[in-house]
Image 1 (cartoon, rainbow, N blue to C red):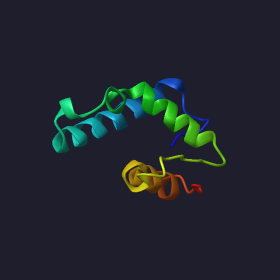
Image 2 (cartoon, helix red, strand yellow):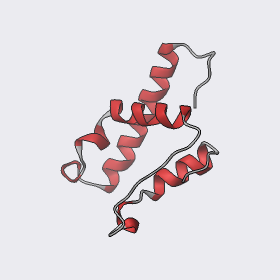
Image 3 (cartoon, helix red, strand yellow):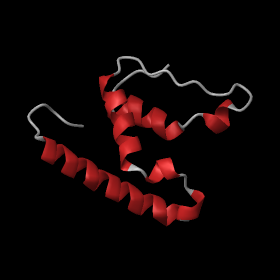
Length: 88
C-alpha cells in the first residue's frame, strides 16, 4: 500500500522491492519457462495494483465451464484480506 505522502521514487523503490521478493518466491516454486511473460512483468503488476487501489468494486469474470480452474484464489485473498475490499 502507498499513501499520498510518498514520493514517486519511494513508491517505485517499494514496488521494485516487493516485486523482487515475489520473483524470488515464484522462482523457487516454478521453472521460469513455465511462467507467462505477464507474471514476470512489473508493469503488468503495477497496472493491476493501481486498478485495485482505485476501484470500489472488483468484478472477476471467468469461463463458467472451468470457474475453479480460472478463478485466482490468491487474488481473492489479496483483495479481501490485504486491501479490505469486497470482491464480486
